[in-house]
Length: 63
Image 1 (cartoon, helix red, strand yellow):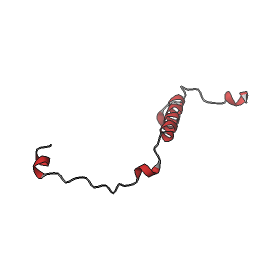
Image 2 (cartoon, rainbow, N blue to C red):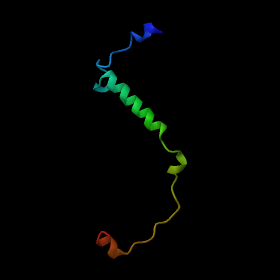
Image 3 (cartoon, rainbow, N blue to C red):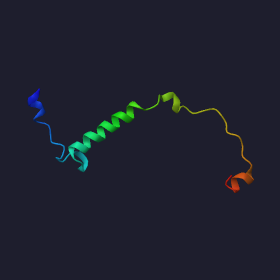
Image 4 (cartoon, helix red, strand yellow):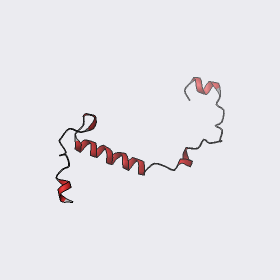
């Protein structure tokens, strides 16, 4: 197991997409954290609730 650790690239070596290996690892970690925090798909379902109609004078004035 320790022999494999010696084969890993150093954090400051070039990595994919023009970033260093350390930056690539940090980006991967951030993506995993965001994926873990993603809300359940049912929250993305369209709502059947209708918004109240606004008076045309309110929308023209920016209110």
